[in-house]
Amino acid sequence: MSWFKRKEKGINTPTVEKKDIPDGLWYKTPSGKIIHMNELRENAYVCPDDNHHVRIGSKEYFEIIFDNNEFTELDEDLISGDPLDFVDTKAYPDRIKAGQKKSGLKDACRSAYGKVNGLDLVIACMDFGFIGGSMGSVVGEKISRAIDYALANKMPFLMISKSGGARMMEAGYSLMQMGKTSAKLALLSEAKLPYISLLTDPTTGGVTASFAMLGDFNIAEPKALIGFAGPRVIRETIGKDLPKGFQSSEFLLEHGFLDFIVDRRDLKNKLASLLKMLS
Figure 1: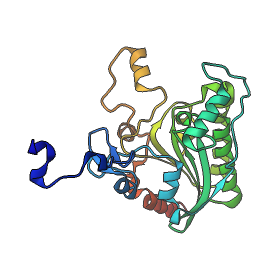
Figure 2 (figure 1 turned 60 degrees about the vertical axis):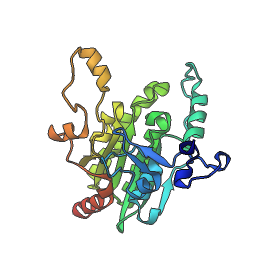
Figure 3 (figure 1 turned 45 degrees about the horizontal axis):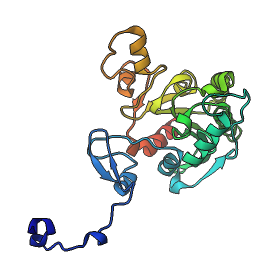
Figure 4 (figure 1 turned 45 degrees about the vertical axis):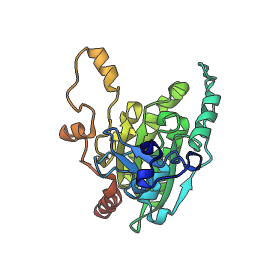
């Protein structure tokens, strides 16, 4: 039984003294590549073996983009109400509280301003971890107020979209945010202030149909799902198989919906180059 006791290799650690690997220490990509979380974090949450861009939230994007991770957050205490008394299997206020507890966020969007390679920038970033990044009244209001701040201080604006679309629990209040944010972006355009829209995985529904596709530059991360209705819904509706890579950022770039695709590791420098050019 020496093979079992591992004496041949000089391994004599009693079972009771063995230590488990802590949860969250490794990350496995869809292709099966495994990477240590520290290495993943240092690589802007991109796996170097297969270029897989891990879904991240506002905390990580702010770390990547803002100089020294220094920024001032805007309107951080806005919280959704329940204007329609929406009732499903779980009451909407309870869903909000559960989302806040799970994600550590107040809602599905955070906004802030700071420096990017020494250049001023206002950023609104969506968080998929809060009810699927759904667009409710708070999301629209925070984006609108961030644009207002950019207008008042003559600063460029970056929108990072990551969303399943409009939040059904707010119905018309949610859909109103499409027109509201688009109108604010029109004011930004009239003031000749740059608007860069970054589409990440996934960007769908009313978000795609409004502010996500209205940038002076529409850019995206590699292999991001971008569209209105999801591919499964479309397939079931038309009863046909979809083109290979349909609704991927590469497909949209080929068909003229995007200006370019940017690797997250190059994102900060690309943004700085764009801001210098547009200024």
